[in-house]
Image (cartoon, rainbow, N blue to C red; front, side):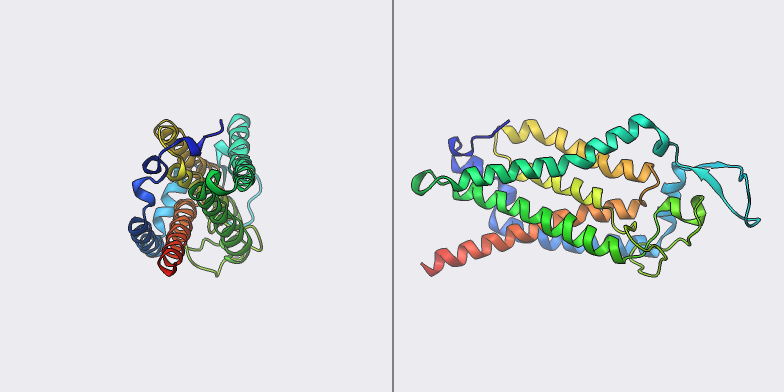
Length: 260
């Protein structure tokens, strides 16, 4: 479905949550919340362990290397239907990103009175948030260097590596590590798109997008691919980046207007 932004009045195209002062306040609040949650998960690592244990099925070890070895599986990870659903959700944000790129190019083909500046700016913010957040900050930096083993890699859940708490870079994971979840970050980015969809489409799309956005990180936890902290902080990181870019864009726009 292609949304005709040009047919909507300015009030519909500029929802309350995207207005200048709100965007800056949202960034500060989300930024502080991210660090507060990191502190919570770091101080109480048993939260991560308890949630992961809800999805772990212990089994008798066939060959035991040490007396206290724990063996078992995360059953959802072996379910073919659940894995197919995860694969669909994995691709979804990037399919939507391609559609947004196409919409931006279409927008740039207009000039003068037909050029929708607000639409182009919102699309640039959305694509920039995906690039800076899930792609660069999460997948190319944090997951590459954090060193935190995934639940199924730790000796608490059938693996061989030691558990480390959220925010610790002392783990023995070499690459594609658990902190934070890349798929959760992409899911958080999907949630951000709700705020740039104009009415009346926003009201219809908000609930399905929010449901998918929450289900994606939930599946990663159920599969033993990430701890709860990885999913929550990964998801929230995209909202922080999105709000930051939105506030920066509006500040730049206001300075340009005042300069003229």
